[in-house]
Image (tube, rainbow, N blue to C red; front, side, top):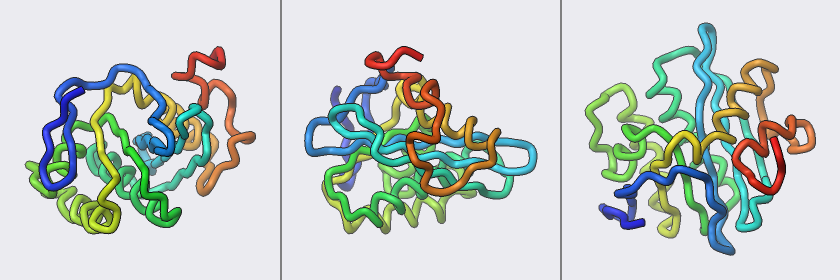
Length: 178
């Protein structure tokens, strides 16, 4: 997969259509959002090279347009990774607008996410080995499914993996049947 690079960020020229584990010692953090009428649920799923789920975080926010939720999910992912002080991290999201805005350091046609993108880029400055990628929804289905499940169950915070239904965490993993 070739990447267009600008200021240390990358936009894939071909969109990944299925989730693949990162190379050891990297972690891959996928993020997504479930937009509900009365709130928005952000979900962040962190997995390693063996496709093991390391962390799942969810956060509820006021309702808003999907692009605002996607941008907030990206910020939430960056904030959580920053707190872990892990340098080898790849982020994946399925919103092309958000990924392009981050990768092009704030160049966005949507002013509503500009301050969020700025916050992400500010965190990024401390972690030069991080990378950010746009992927197809199929490659982001676990984060999407977790966001929907957490919204339905109204669960927020660091969710232990044993509390999450198997179908949520295995929706893109060929090792475990859904």
